[in-house]
Image (tube, rainbow, N blue to C red; front, top):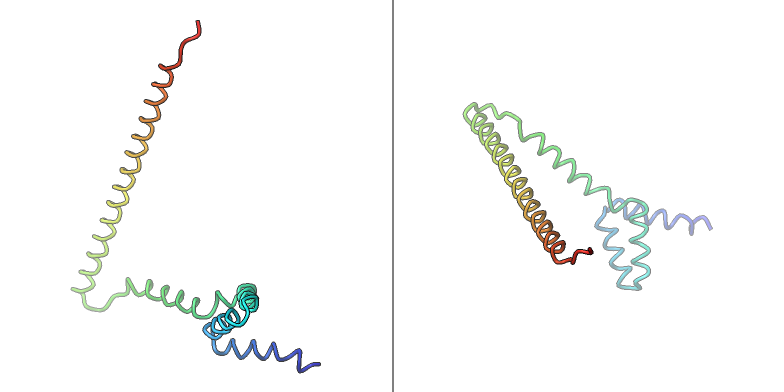
Length: 131
């Protein structure tokens, strides 16, 4: 009975050694053979958090590392000055664009409010007065 209890653990370790791709291949194979098997494997992958570790965490750490290197100096003063000026200019453009979008939203809100008030005034004029 102990060998029966260990084969799922051994299969799980074998799949973990091969990574997320092996788990996904097993899941697809499960769907092909009989869809509830694939669904059960998918549920297990989500429940055991196998879907969210491994390669995903590697790509997140790589992105974090790349963001850290963005401001690293190269040692070439001309290039570093050019890079700093370009980044400053891009940040200024981003701020100007965000301000532009805010003005657009405010103008749209004003038009919608004015339309509401006009419709409300027309409705008030159309109602007969009780008197």
